[in-house]
Image (cartoon, rainbow, N blue to C red; front, side):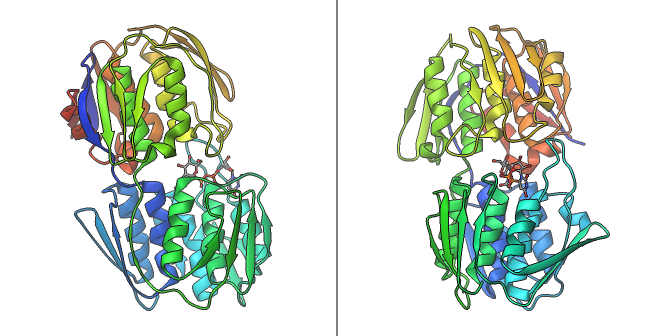
Length: 417
Ligand code: UD1
């Protein structure tokens, strides 16, 4: 199993580019099931999760081809409507094939994803909303078995703005009869990117990016071409990498409007951040203040940057409070950071961070989930001595060649196979 070895203490300097957004690419890949023919996507990141999505599409009988960050999906006659446990358990986002399969084939059998390191992650919003759209489902041997005589639009109100549920329903409703209104919809940029692709395919969608989305069903959709938006979480992670080492780093190919909450917190903390149309940069800062953060749905501070921000705060002047409101168990990195000497007091959803410049020591640590892995790499960049991050297959799910990007900026980081 690959590990990442980091020798801390190197200032990062220079320019780096963010890749395409994993969380935009995944739903868009599953949306291909809505239209036969060849779909072409550029700026697709080369990641394990993308490979998992390709395997799932292949298992349905689609033909996928990936080279140089371009992914082609040819959708033919479907072989099966079953998403097998072995594929779904590797990537929870596989549940996003449920809406498209039902819309197109009127039935679907999709493995329940099960729990994961960051919380229970139920799919009740997806299922309740599909029921409103005239689907019947039952749970059988760990699978959701769903059927419809034809989806019919309705008014769906989510208890909480769920990204995945908004995406699943937006895809299903695109081919449903009549109008679907999603209220309390998620507003993440990835929702907007999916809507943009669905609209290119011929869907009628208004309001994506706001809390009310109106989808008027159409009879059929056709494949199209699309460039995936940049990954805001990768961009934010790279920005923090530059900041935490006291370096000057410019992240190109990103959209700073997608990480305004992070930029605002970092500016408040004392960093000099410049944001242009497609870049964001941080300039050398030696002292920064502790600033509290609370994660919440977009446009508030993203849960996917919470672990990385916490590491930044371990080096700040003073104490800060990090509050996680999205997932109930998203402090898995805390135990590992404690082993590196961080002063953290975790409670259920709140963690007090006592900042101390240079307070981290290198240690062997264990990655537990995708974003926790990234935070451990960041900690390794400023820790004294050697940090070895184990189980970095988590990192490979969501960061393309992170070690190359960081070493090009001057980090001492190496993958050990
Ligand atoms: C997506 C992202 C993930 C990010 C998360 C929150 C992808 C592939 N993943 O995950 O990186 O951390 O958004 O920004 O895009 N919930 C329910 N019932 C449901 C659905 C959700 O209770 O049916 C709860 C979840 O447990 C969680 C909250 O709603 O507490 C938000 O989850 P959701 O937005 O659905 O996250 P994902 O789409 O799974």
